[in-house]
Amino acid sequence: MKIIQYFLSAAAFGLLAVPVSAQQYLRGDFHQHTTYTDGNYSFAYMMNKNHQYGLDWWANSEHGGGSTRDAAVSGLDKARNTRYWDEYLPLPIAGSEKFSNGHRVMWRWQVLKDYSFRETLKARRMYPGKTILQSYEMNIPGFEHGSMGIVNGQFDSVPHCNPLAEFEYTFDQNDADTTGGRAQGWTKSRSTGREKAIEALRWLRNRYPYTSYLILAHPERKPQHQRGYTIAAIRDLNNEAPTVCFGFESIPGHQREAQRGGYDRNSVGGGTYGGAGVFSAKIGGVWDALLSEGRRFWLFSNSDYHGEKGDFYPGEYQKNYTFTHGKSPEQIVEGLRSGNNWVVSGDLIDSLIFTVETTDNRAVMGSTLFIKAGEPVLITVRARDPNCNNHNTYSNYRNPELDHIDLIVGEVNGPIPPSDPGYTTDTVATTRVIARFDRTGGTTDSNGLTSRKWKQTNDGWVEMAFEINSIGRPLYFRLRGTNHGLNIPDETDENGNPLNDTLVGENNAEKAFADLWFYSNPVFVTPQY
Image (cartoon, one colour):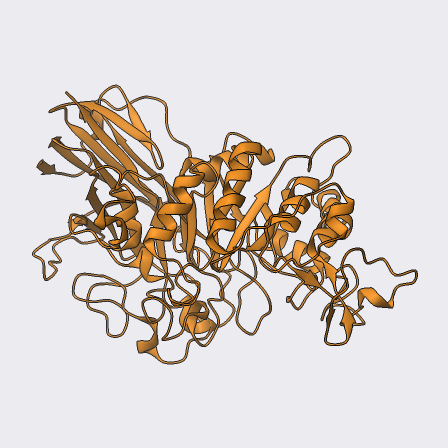
């Protein structure tokens, strides 16, 4: 492909008059915990924290299986930390009998259906401008965890979350109830392991193909020989239900933990890299291998909040920015599925507009630009570095500066069938940084790539453009940016790639807020002959 790099000749290129507004991106978090499972705080307390940190939508999403505590009245914010289900009379617990630490367990399907969703409805009344979903964190059979939701019924005239509760009872690895769900008319899966995970996705695909999601959580955390995710497993899950299993949280929560993200030396990659797991942090790694097949498989980031020892509150440090056409639950799930989503830590930027276009067409993140062979393409990026404090109460580094933005390109070579030996290959050699933009220009990395100067406006926006005048094969483009320069000790290598976070020693909140990144999802370009 032939490339012409230049700065802001967009007007001469004849761009579409209709702008893509940064104001249409909603801030969200869909993985967080309360005392209904292993969180430290009550349900109401956590709902308030989502609101306090400026999120537009969020989902309560905590472990399947069973629990012993009532999060309506239990938590460090309450006069009493723990109120057990078996303290109530008459005993409210349904289903098969199980005990944990001497107390009777209530199965998660019942907690969701009869208690947690009731608290969700209270939160909606408390915060009427927000969209609040009841979801849950699935123990995926044969694997680890996934953030899972079904929005059907939740906003009906008589709202309920019965489909979600049924799914948890039927398929969660840790739900051993055999009687309570059956009394609801539900049929428990008899499958085990990966077969059960595939069956669960098939169930969702057949019943709720566009109103459910299963996003793989902290996918690098577990070693691959201990129920961790291999690329073949990710491909299998995505193949079974591409409109349901369409992404992963490869930028995990737990960003305050001593081992950042909760990733240790046994995790895939041996830790995080600038807070990201190796699947997304490594150029040419697992994520790029998936994108290079043309898979619509997206990157997300959530707080996974349990407690202040290892976590930031939802919206305090990490955010998903998701483009939606409204605030209904269906529109939010469709926004996630679309891939028009970017993720950021520490409010390094608070707005991003990323488009690829010809003179008469445009594509945004998650979509495909179809072009005529040989037609020039313009890539434009506008990002805003806010001149304000960024919720950092742990150090004086409260207004970080964006150092540079990398434009990454990869080739799309088509899907790999399961019978192909390449189905287990988790790298791709054709992905690279094609351009870098910063405030001064002129910085050359070890690959010989020299940065170009962006245009900076008084209101914090930086603007850049890049033209490719001939594309001969399908490609995708994505972005990453950081507050670090190139070759920063213990932070970045000579090409600006994030280094393993263990190099800075034991992690804490101050170190996390000193190491900030954003990632976009890709835009695809397909030439037609």
